[in-house]
Length: 421
Ligand code: PLP
Image (cartoon, rainbow, N blue to C red; front, top):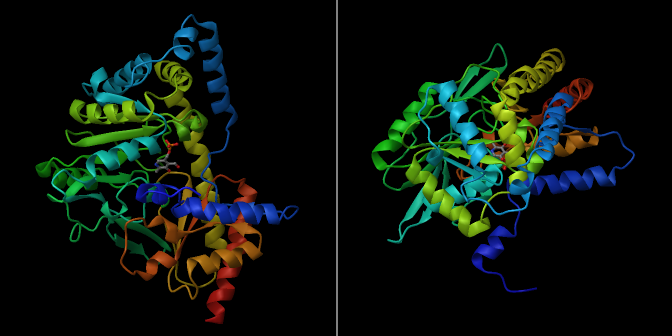
């Protein structure tokens, strides 16, 4: 084995949920023949209307004279010009903005974008000082755990809990009494809607975070992988928030193109230029085939239309199945489901759980149901907090029946483990 650098050792390890996925894949393989209900997946389902949209756009691209220009030549590091113009005009019309081509960067998936941003703005500065990458509300996307080349830069804040005990519901809120954004902050990042919790920070909360960061020129990166206008996986009203220090980041992955790897950053020209150079150094530019079909789907309006009329209702209905099954099946224990405001997951908190989330996950596996233990969704939150071991992420990418049966079995396991304590 070659000797690894510090960065080599770090980056050759999987973090968070990716590490658990290994256990899940091994479970599925070892249990071949068993009928597992897999509620762990983050991979969106292939919805027929969505697949058809991408097929039609591909046919249109193949038939057009642009084809050679798209795939047979290098392009600009900023991204494929027709996609950039399509996004600029769509957003200008939709949100009354004044974006030019200079405000937009296309990257190979949004994970890459967070890698650029985390390392351009967070980590060690020329003066030797460490600039923090602040996650204002933990839990949040597990992928943020692996993006910094200086992992000690990642700092997450415990949330405040808004609990509706009678309804068995709760919601995380940023705890502004604790949150620190100051000269030590390099950037702020959060997902809205949130993977894993389905939380949507309110417009006011987002504006407050951006206002805290503005005096220090700290970029606020809003990971809008589930937000409107595409894939529009918000089940509650929300408006994208823009501003001088905000980088509004999107992904086409949940709108049916995860395989094509398309991420989008929208923001101030100065911020976009920094990330663009980072991209030139790293990979020259993202692949152009996906960008070309995305431009067609955005320009025709079909992508936004399918997002709000097909993708959103599909997952919202899955959440309702999960919610109503839990209401019927859960025993008399302190369980709390996070308000389902968006994304493709449900987040369940089992207060006073007598086991760890990992042990509960193992017991549920014995009943052939797989969920994801919640403790992997607290990157950057180093303090002990029992809540970190009391939550589960449940994917909405299964059939209605699988979700219902999965939740009935989960309720039974919960009944047994609380009864034993
Ligand atoms: N951000 C969030 C909140 C996600 O859930 C995901 C993927 O699941 C990503 C970013 C990364 O998406 P991609 O790199 O496919 O754009």
